[in-house]
Length: 457
Ligand code: EPU
Image 1: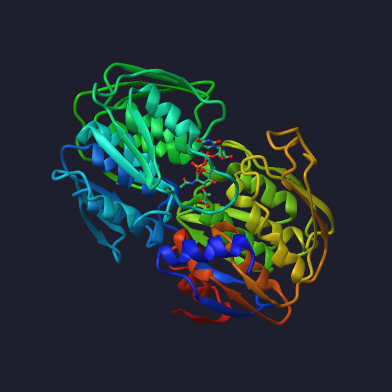
Image 2: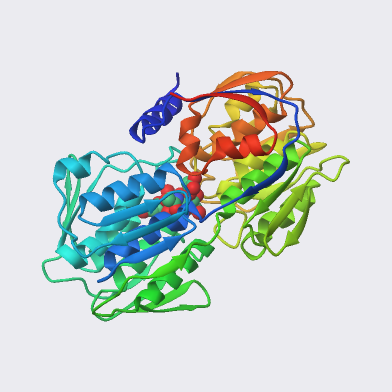
C-alpha cells in the first residue's frame, strides 16, 4: 500500500470507519431522487461558533457524517452539552458549562479532522487558554496552518508549539487587529471571524475568502449578536462585542455533495433529482456541467441533473476560490470527462496534491496524464514547484472494473462513480472515509438503483 493509502486508512480508522468495502457492478445509470442536507464545511464551523454563545444554540439540517461526530466529541470534552437528533437532523449545543478539557481527551481526537484549529479563538475568549492536537483531514497537500497562527498571534494570543500539539493563551485578552491574508484561505477567514467577534475593538480583514459557507457562518454570527460587514474586494470588517447569545439556524445545503451526485448522474448516463440543491451557490458548476454536455432543471425544491443523450464534450477547468470552480468539484467530474470526446484539462490551483485519485482511474482504463506545469489557464502558486497539479484527460475511454482503494474524501466519491460507470465488477475499499462528508451515501446509492454489495466492518 502506498503512503497516501496508508494515511487514508489511518484517517478512516481514527473516525472508526476503516476497512469498509463496496463491490459494485457497473453499467447502470443512476436514476431517482435524493436529498442533500447542510454543508459539511458550514455545519462543523457552526458547531464551533456555538462555543461563543452565553446560551444554547440549535442547528438544523445537520448531515449524519463522521466529521460532525468528531466535532461533537471535541465540544463535549470541553463541557458543551450536545444533543444530536440524527433522524430529525438537528443538533442542540449548550455551552453554558464550557471548561478546559483534559489533555488526554483532546489527544483522543488527534489526527481526526482540521476543525480543532478553529476552537482556538472561542476557547481563548471563554477560558483564556486553548490546546489543539495534531490535525487530520484529507492528505491533498501540505495543508500548513501558518495563516491561522499568524492570525491568532496578531489578536494577541501567545502560541507555544509542543510535541503533542499547540498550546495557546491570551493573558491580556484578545484585541481587534488588521489582517491581510496572502491567499483567500477558507479556514483562516473563519479563524478571523470566530476570534474577532468577541475581541476588543475593530478588526479589518482583507484578502478574505467569500465562499457561501463563510457567508452563512456570518449569518449565524450576526444572529448571535456580532457586528460584521462584508465589503467589496474581499474585505470583511468586524466590530467586537462583549457578549454573544445562542442561535437557531438552518444550515446552507451542501453544494459539494450536490455537485458530486450531479457528476454521478452525468457519468452514468442517468437522471438524478438532488433535493435541497439551489442554483445561486452552484452557478459556476452549472455552467461547466452544461458545457460538458449535461442538462439540468432548476426547481424550487432542488435541481434535476441528467444526461440528455449525445456525446459529452471536453472542457478546460481551472479550480479556484469562490466564485471560481471549487476544488472539491473536480474529482467527481473527472469521471464524466473520461467519457468526453476529446482532450480536457483540469488545472488544480487550490491544493498542490489533489490528483492522488487518478492512479486508480488509470488502472481502470482512463487516459490521464499529470503535469507539473500550469496548463490551460493562468500560472498559479504551484507552477514553479514541481507539483503534479494539471491533469490532461483524453477521451472517450471505457473504464473496466478493478480493485481500488479510496485515498481521500472527494477522490473517494469519484472512485465510486468510476466503479458505477465501469464494465464489470469493481471492489472499492476504504469507502468508510467517504462518510466523513457524504451522509447516508450507501442508502442514496440504493435509492438511485446502483447495483452493489456493501461489506461494512
Ligand atoms: N493554506 C496555507 N496556510 C494556512 C491555511 C491554508 O498555506 O494556514 C493554503 C492551503 O494549503 C491551500 C489553500 O491555502 O493550498 C486553501 O486552503 P483553505 O484554508 O482555503 O482550505 P481549508 O479551510 O483547509 C476548506 C474545506 C476544503 C475545501 C477548501 C477550499 C473545510 C473543513 N475544508 O479547507 O474542503 O476544499 O476549504 O474551499 O471546510 C473537503 O470538503 O473535502 C475539503 C477538503
